[in-house]
Length: 93
Image (cartoon, rainbow, N blue to C red; front, side, top):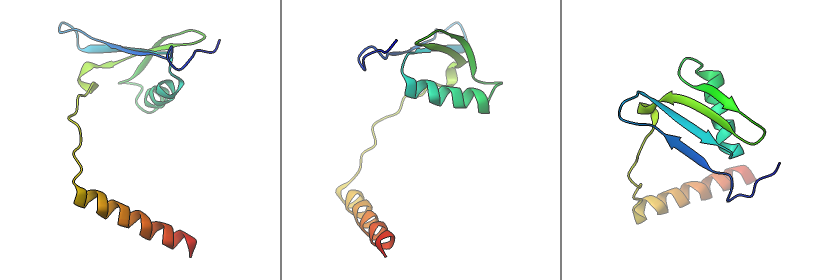
């Protein structure tokens, strides 16, 4: 069964009373990332369920992260642009 991009949802669920978060997803990219984490860190990340279109994982809720947006100055942006130009020149040579 193929889902539309809109239907490929990911839901993270946890509460104040437990130390474990549950992640349900039907997004293939998220599944690949979590499957890699399950393989690399089996004591931390667990695959707890799956069906034809989705998978459910559990992991410590302390691994759920909220970040403030990164602010890039004009100077930083220009420096990065120059670095990319240099890298492209090196590849062409």
